[in-house]
Amino acid sequence: MTQDLEIQAAVADLNTYLDAAPRPDCDPVEVGPFTLFVSRSPWPYYARPTVGSRTPITAGDLDTLTAACAERGVDFGIEWVHEDHPELAGLVAAHGLDLSSHALMRAEAADVAATVIDGVTLRVVAAGDAALLAGRATADVAFTAGGTEAGPEGAAERDAFEGKLDPEMAAHLNDRARRGLTVTAVAEDPTEGVVAVGSYQPMGEYAEIVAVATLPSARLRGLAGALTALLVRHAHDEAGVRTVLLSAQNDAVARVYSRVGFQQVGTTYAAEPAG
Image 1 (tube, helix red, strand yellow):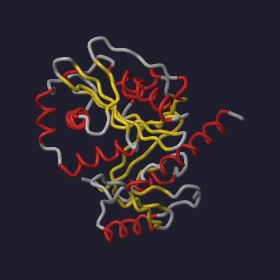
Image 2: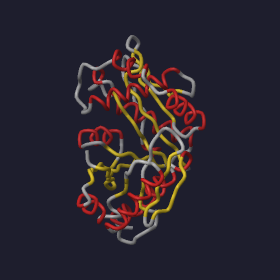
Image 3: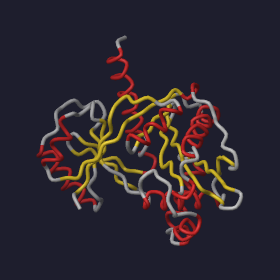
């Protein structure tokens, strides 16, 4: 099999996972060439091109999807793998939607080795563990601050975000942990508490790494890479996962994941209303 065919096969497998992953918390609705995932939880979802569909998507299909979202009271959003529908990026841009792209990367779980960072404890947390919600607040701080550089935001900002966490969302996070749908790991500093977080979502032999984030005050210490490696090893050893995927926010983040053992196999896109 040539490298191109290997990549096509890998993208097809990952696409199947990306279609399956939202379903435990969603009602899938077929809307033309799209599957719209209508959330039953506090977490919003999106539409994806229906797996296996090769029919080119049109501007009329986007209008139909917009109407379906409005009818069901859900926000409009689309996520897809560019290699499956290369026509869609230009189409949504012409439709006036905001477009973002990320490197789609994968690793064979057995090939990733766990790493140790001096001065912090890396561990997987269970439902009911206080570190689970502290981890969510850590991600909120990190993604609000943006970027990958060190900054002043730290434990105080994390605690403030945790204090504002919606009880319904807190219950949802614990429920997904209890059902094994999301597995979360944290990095804990002996004085600052949780300073980094990441999760994976297993589905059969596949899993996706999501929401890896470090407090700006704790960045540039290798925590994101170490947590990612821990999550991959846990997915392999405890959940029977063979292949792990993720989407890298930018080139700097992709380099972090490359050092762990991930390789780019495609590009993911997301579109939402401008503004």
